[in-house]
Amino acid sequence: MSPVLLPFELQIGLRYTHAKRSNHFISFISIVSMAGIALGVMALIVVLSVMNGFQEELRARILGVAAHLEISGPANRLADWRNVLEQARRNKEVVSGAPYVNAEGMLANGDLVRGAIIRGVLPEMENQVADFARDMKAGKLTDLQPGGFGIILGAELARALNVVPGDKLVLLTPQGNITPAGVMPRVKQFTVTGIFEAGMFEYDSGLALINLRDAQKLLRLGDDVSGVRLKLDDLFRAPFVTRELANSLSGHYYLTDWTQSHANFFRAVAIEKRMMFLILLLIVAVAAFNIVSTLVMAVTDKQSDIAILRTLGARPSSIMKIFIVQGAFIGVFGTLMGVASGVLLALNVETVVPFIEHMVGMDLFPADVYYISKLPSKLVWSDVGIIVGVSLFISLAATLYPSWRASRINPAEALRYE
Image (cartoon, rainbow, N blue to C red):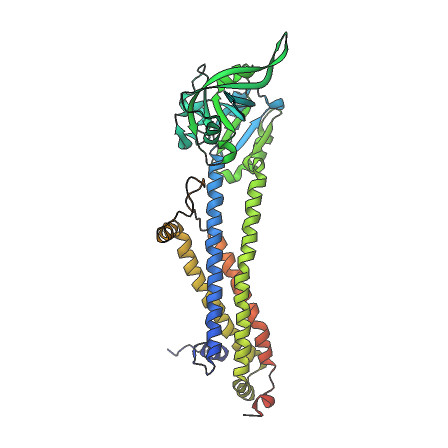
């Protein structure tokens, strides 16, 4: 079997890359270019993986308290919630559901007063749509018994009111009682039965849970509720399920999914991720400028070689390909090193960070300061593909101008002083 012959442009380009040069500065710039591209690609992969991890962690914490999808009635009142829940569960993507009552109130413990969202829930059904069982720091959700007027507070709210399980506090609701002295707010004493910590300040400082029956009695709703909360099989299909339920439900209802209720937050995270991608891409771009410098100096150093090749019949396009191969090798090799190191680091961030903390003797993310005390990481291969594609494109684009200049060299001028 005869050996496979590579195109001479590829052979010479690779030879220029590997051969010893009389000008060692060119070799040094090539190494710096490879290292720069590798560093940029590694930084992009690691940073985007960490941001993906943060995004997933925050999404999990938000959806541990909020619902994938909510169905409510006009004036925040839903009379036939059992029928609505039954219709909604006919959709194969709806896993479970639970009724809820939402109201605003003031919680008071002596001179300490805080506003809060009061949510009435059925503990046995609420555990099917939320993860309060995971977030409970004291007590259980099932401690909310009808008629017991127990209340579960977020950790920050309990700290602000200076209460612990077993303490009493007063709930004042805007729905007033008409008395000879005028309209007076409705007041009821509750017993703190538990404390939860979801890891989101919005909920930990402003949400309180009571039993659904107690909420209906306090707000005089009868058997009505504010709406029903649904858990879906795939949370990312929430907008599609919302449209399907809007068409299938018989009646006038308001449907809101998590992408709408927290749209600004997740949009801000997405924009931040894009901006970090563009900023870190500048590292690759700077390394690409080094490729330009390397090839310009290589073209100057190899003018006599170029002239000899031209006199032997090499076309300008062949000369151009030789230096494109040389520059592309730097870009490809640097990108592959960056991908290997970036993927390895992204998959082991949770191991590397504790090692760094041990080496420096301090916690980078103290649990008493940050809700997320560990650096999460989620490697998304589509992100890696985009990074590789952009890096190779920038590296290839950097080779075009020096290669074109090499193809324009006049053999007679190059050999005049040889």
